[in-house]
Length: 249
Ligand SMILES: C[S@@+](CC[C@H](N)C(=O)[O-])C[C@H]1O[C@@H](n2cnc3c(N)ncnc32)[C@H](O)[C@@H]1O
Image 1 (cartoon, protein in one colour):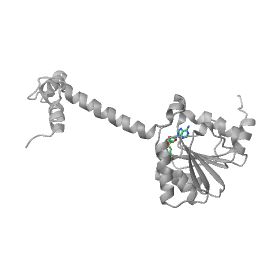
Image 2 (cartoon, rainbow, N blue to C red):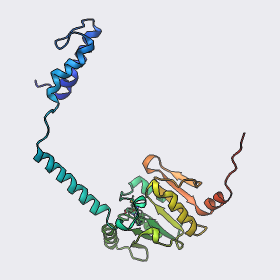
Image 3 (cartoon, rainbow, N blue to C red):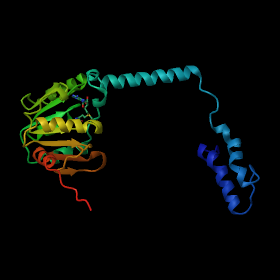
Image 4 (cartoon, rainbow, N blue to C red):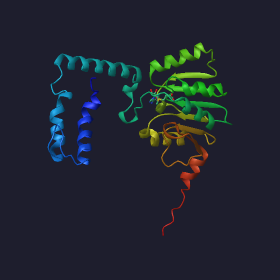
């Protein structure tokens, strides 16, 4: 029987340790425990590739990886050239659990909803089926076209769902009383400042995965990567106006 790679790697070492424990002190590969590992590696180094890969293989691998990266960035990054580096957020769709968590936090709410960075429209479609009048802001034209086509095939009227190819940083959000966002930790503080300036007092903000720093949460559901946070703008404003006093001992 041909030994597996694992057996070839670990077999002699385990044998050596076993023999050492049993007091034999020697094995076919070594004379003392101190040098046994070196000898084993010497004996078995044949299983590790020591020669360099062929230059053509390296070039082809590099070319394939570069093309894959190019394809990925064409799909996830168009429209990003005008956005400063520290505000760039790539496309990553919400998970099913994440979308369900958003819907739990939206229970009892109604009115207009803006999804900041709508991607393929997953959160927008979920919210629209619960009766919200939704606008998805998305900078990536491919994703906007895809989301619009989904709305078309599902026969959802534009009065209920609209996808706008627009940078949400440059959009006035004052007409929305519900905002959802699944972005990145590095943009949350700046986004918080924008929302505090623009949103009406009765607005609810829901953030997937990344909480707003220094904002008091109304509630949170889920755990780990699917954790989702809700904030009432009125509570956040009053909290920031009257921050709780820290008692000095
Ligand atoms: C993490 S994805 C979330 C997608 C979607 N909301 C979901 O939950 O499935 C973030 C999306 O925000 C978009 N985005 C990033 N910056 C943007 C901006 N300034 N304006 C509009 N969309 C933006 C990205 O293109 C990406 O599709």
